[in-house]
Length: 401
Image (cartoon, rainbow, N blue to C red; front, side, top):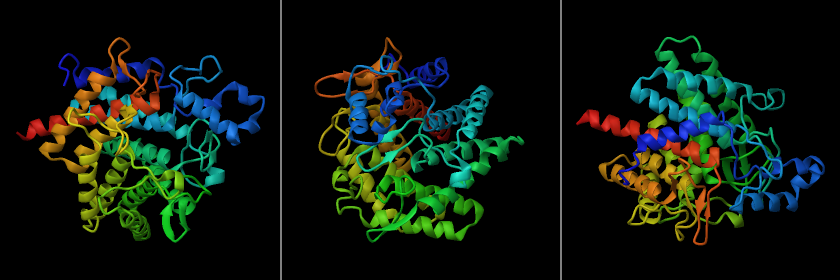
C-alpha cells in the first residue's frame, strides 16, 4: 500500500468532499435530468434516451454543467454514507458520526416513493433511467436502492435502540415495511423461475437483484418471525444458487445481453447469499458460496492487487469493483488471506485511481483514457463505506490479538 496515503485519511477526504456539496452530486446515469428533456420529455423513453445516457456515461468530459444537469442527492448514495458513518461511529464512539447519520436518515424518510401507489416503503433514483431492458422514470422504486436504504435505516435504528433513543422506531418501521413492498410487488414467477424483480412490472431476471431482495426479506422475516417471508427468501435464493455455473460463476442475468460475468455483481451475489445463510441459519448454500468465493478470488484479482471488472478483462478499472471486493472479502471470506487481499486491493486502488490533488477517486480508467468525473453515488460513497468498514474490521482484529 502507498504509505503516503492512509486509508483513514482518504476515507475522511471522501466524507469531507461529500459534506461540501451537502451529499449531492452527479451520477453516471443522470443524463436524462438534462433540462433539454423538459422540452421533449417523450424522448426519454426511446432509443434517444438510451443513447443520451450512454453519451453521458461514457464521455470523459463532464457534459452536465453545460446541458443543465444539476447535482442532487441520491437515496442509495445517502444509504451508503450512513452505513459508513455507522462503521466510523462503532470504531471511534464519536457521536458526531451518529448525529450525521441521523440527519441523513431523516432526509431519506422524506424521499420514499409514493405510498398511495406502492403501499409500502420503497425508494428509487432521483433521475429517469433508460436501460436496454426497461425504462424507469424518476419516482419509481427499484429493489437495490430500496435495500441499501433499508439496511442503513435498520442498522441506525439498532444502534439508537441500544442507546435508549426514542428515535429508533421511526427508522426501523420503514426499513421493515420495505420487505412487504418486495414481497407484494416484486415477487415474480416467469419463464419457469421464481424470483424478485428489479423494478415493478418487469420480468427480467437478474441474480444480484433477486438475491439481495431475498436477503432483505430473510432479515425481516427472521426479525418479525414471519415464516412466509423466510420461505420466499429461500425459494428465490435457491433459484440463483441452482443457476450457478459449475465453476462457481454467475452471469449477470437471463437475457441475451446479460450473459457477462463481472466482479462487483458477483460480489453482491456472494454477500447476499451469505447474509441469507447466516440470517436463517441454513447450510444449503455453503457449497455455492464456497465455489463462488473461490471463483471470485481466482478470476477477479491480478497479482498486483488489481480488482478486475470482468472475469476475462480487467478494464474498465473502477472503484465500484474495489469497494465491493473489500466488503465481499471481509464479510464472506474473513480469513487472514482475505484480509491481506483486501488490503492489497485498497493499496492498488490508491496508487492507480486516487487523485491526490483533488482528494477523491476517478470514475474509471480504460486502456485509452481516464474518466475523472466525480460521481458521488457510484464512486465516492462506495469508497467511504468500504474503507470505513475495512478500518472497523481492522480495529476488531487488532483487539483480538
